[in-house]
Length: 415
Image (cartoon, rainbow, N blue to C red):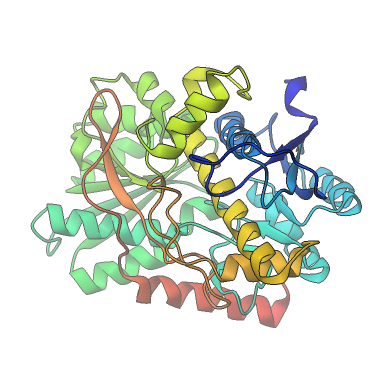
């Protein structure tokens, strides 16, 4: 994987699809993505990073952000906060104005630093959901639906598709970690509102062995199940649920369930499983089509062609699309050179942006760094993740109660 750990000089502009390719001559805009390529997050990092790099390469072909190239530095932290700090210090010295660690331990360890240094940190689908409170965390952007928003939307889908949840049973099966426990307060509040019974079932990390947990779930006889894990443990959850008599359409997952997991379970066996979707899968959207045409088929792709359009690849594309659009708005309003403060303001001015249909429309403000909390439920149809409805939000009053509670705790403790 040595090819990953190098600096790439890349560039972008929102209107890549029709733009010409002028020479890039202006000072670069620097982003840094020190991530975990070798330890815990390996199930998604390569694919996610490939999507980020291919998107930046695509827009590089069209002259940069108003002629400014984007330098994207990629390195490995091994999921270790100390290595993340070292990578951050290098990126700061080099003039980076945005960082993405794609690691909850590293990102959480860096919150105070980025706030002090006024460097933007994106936390798409990881980190801390309370950073959605932009007043408390002005330089931290979750960008997409928090885990609280995901749980709320999944319950809403069960309620709507199942003819109401009143009197029914919901099982929350989760990896026994802060991540796995995070949605429980939202689920508990929704169980009161919608009058269903909630029971939680933890399993030990990393989740390779869950048989005893699913035996308990079988005895509970739930109407619906939410599985809340990541990596190989998610495929184990799906497989063990089905083995214990739970139908695939009863199974609902957090965002971390991908094509590779369906291959592990069996594409036909898993048909009907549902999950939260943060970005469209597949290659049908204009931005992914443009990447295929101008980057991958031109021999400029950052990784295997078969990754293009897959779940984590497309999420990676989406993160850079948002970041680049924020930089474009910042340049238009505040001029060059960009810094963290200008980029933050650019992101906070972004309204109804959907990356040409790749993601639900996101809008940010100085109060809301989540972008609205939109998503949708998709089901595995045997070949791909097919949406079961439109992009929407659910129970955001409940979600924001948790966001504000966490932000208040941070203001009081600094942690």
